[in-house]
Image (tube, rainbow over all chains, first blue to last red; front, side):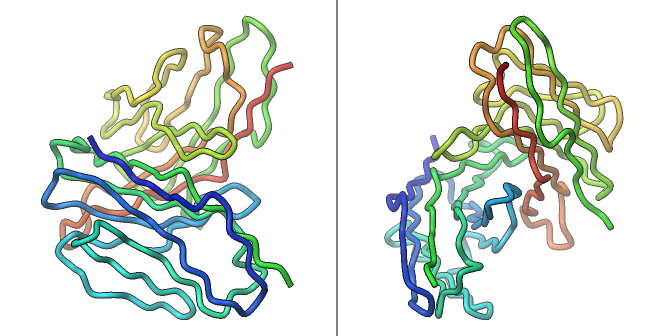
Length: 119
Length: 117
C-alpha cells in the first residue's frame, strides 16, 4: 500500500521568511511519481510540480524549490521569501506504478499542510 | 479557455434525496476522477474513469454512483445511501499519456461544496 505523510498540520510564518513543507512517502514501486498541489481558500487544487523517481535533481522555480531524496523517501518543498499570497493548504501526492496505482494512476494524497503567511 | 467546470458551487441536500454534481472538461483528457475532501483532511478517491462507458470504484465509493456517457462529462450522484455527504467534492481529469509517456498530472475543477439541510 502507498502512503504519504505530511506531519506538519499548520505552519505560520511572517512575510519574507523561508518555510519548508515536509513530505514523506511509502511505496513498494520502483517507478513512481510525486506531486505538489496548492489549494488556496477558493478551493481549487493548483498543480505545482511533478517529479519521477528516477530524477533526484532538485528543482527551483522562482521562489519555490523542491528537494527529492530517495534515501529518506522525502520530497520537501521550500518557499523562499514567503508572501501573503502563498497562504494556502499544500498537498503532497504520490502515484505509483500500474500495479499499486492501476492504469489510471490514482493519486494518494497526504493530509495537507496549512500555511499561513502573516504580513 | 481549456479547463474543468464543476457545478453547482454550493449544493444542499434534503434527507432521502439524491443529488447530482456536474463535471465537464474540454481538455480532451481520457481519465476523470472524483474526490471527496473533509475538513483538515486530504483527498479520498470516490470513482474514476479511463474511457467512455467504463468506470471503477475508488476507496470510498459506497453511497455514490457515476456515469461516463461522454468523454467530456463525468457526473457524480450522491445517493440517499451516503449517510454523511457533507464535504467538498473535487473533480479532476488527466491525459493518459504525455509526449514522453510520463505520468501526467491531474488537473482539478473548482469544487462543489455539499451540505445537508
